[in-house]
Image (cartoon, rainbow, N blue to C red; front, side, top):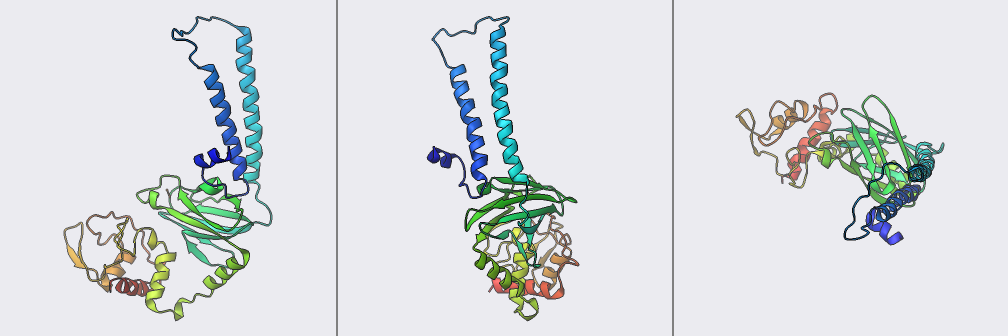
Length: 305
Ligand code: CUA
């Protein structure tokens, strides 16, 4: 049974995954048994009999499904309560979804993009909202799925069964980058988790080499969702080999990827759109400082050496 369950579903990696699965299998198996008996072929000349009225039959097919439905309802309601009632001591993380990334903010102010770090074996509460359209936060291993909506906080909690990494999907169609809107949950031992938080908090962009500032911006400000750094094609052009490359724009003009072009593309992404891409990048005007923009320029240079 356990073996078959594992063939059908992802591993049970949260404390209540087994509960969700048990109900799922109950519904599946009872339906399967019922239909196998009810609609089996009885003989080669099997025809449907003409029945106009049968009290016994009608009571039976009302009462038995009612009992089954009540079992499923009570079971589902109890699991739903577990999923909704957040433990008081839960570790809280703010989640911001935007096309096409997940941004996580921890209580000490540290942020991470697409990688969610959590303490293992501890309840974690996610307080989620979207900056644009509706997204949906889905971790198959945890059996959790929750819509992430603009102008409203939605909540979800989970507790892992130990350290490990688990994939996050966006499961509400949100635009061209929907299928790329993925992330990872890293559940770390308490000590390791605290060390990670401390290390992230100590990162000071004022004393970092510019190219490293650029890499940090790429990783934490959402560039990575669309721009690869290894030459892979994405929603936007790859950063690898971009420096000083000839650009052909959709309005028929051409240019070269120098400092001015990169800066303009960050602050006014719609000004020059390269052939083969859509004008969908949001502006970073007012979001990135000059130092961060220069960091990105230097990072792109470094990736092209
Ligand atoms: Cu975000 Cu689909």
